[in-house]
Length: 338
Image (cartoon, rainbow, N blue to C red; front, side, top):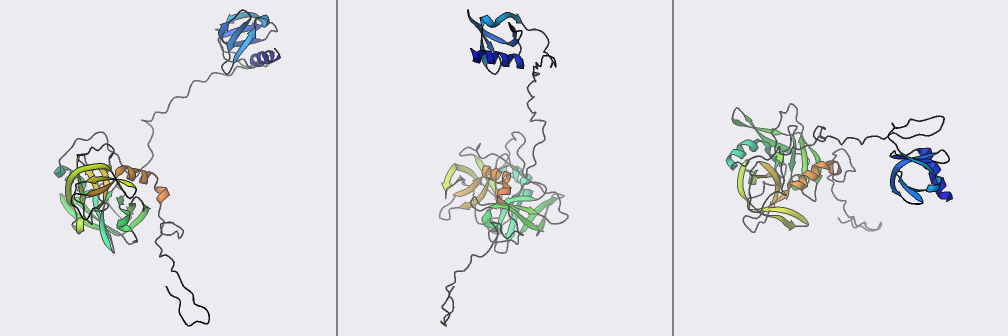
């Protein structure tokens, strides 16, 4: 009974949610929703707990339709105002965070390879290093582009060849100020940026959805196999989940050769669905591409894969491994062997 009296006094002091008002014989009151009226007690929902009040303590029960009471200095009673729930954010009107890539706007119609090559060819580039070459594709007009890690592995002197379309003609231009922004050796992805002065706005491609691909769906690639720039090959998706070396790849009959590495694999709506990166040398029509979902994840978390040429502690800095030296004894005339 002492516990009940304490709860009654506590509730009367706070003056919790309104509904019915129960006047008590000690001139206190309790406001809440009556859940049950029994012969010897009344059960009231106070919002945060349920209270049972003995009938012997109740003098009157009335419906509380009066305006919400305000704080009173004389009684010390305070009823907290009921705040309406905060409106849900309007995601459509909120500005989206800046990303390096663009996504398709709606479902684009399928087109022929010929039509798509004319639209997308300018965004596919050739990546050159002192020891070889590969392909890549531009993500946005600022000059960010994707290629394979193995195309630039061990190299820092890079150049990018871009074919700009001017007056209906292709104008070949080589950019030599290229920065390595981020790289993931294990998924064979690298992010580069062209930083030459007075560069134009680059044509770019959109990243699609490889999860939506169907086995047998037509795809095509643009790249520089064996240095033959702007080569187009077409095929189908053979399987979407080919496991090789612990990673899942898109398998395709699209012809892929050395030099195609890092280039885009497109669907028939002109969206990038993968990065071509390898083939089986002892077979035909057995090409593989990194799914574009891995590219999206890499770009969204690029700070985790950042490369810094000026930071000697960067885990991706190209340094020769330390040599193992076999030191000879001081009185020996033999030299240390490497």
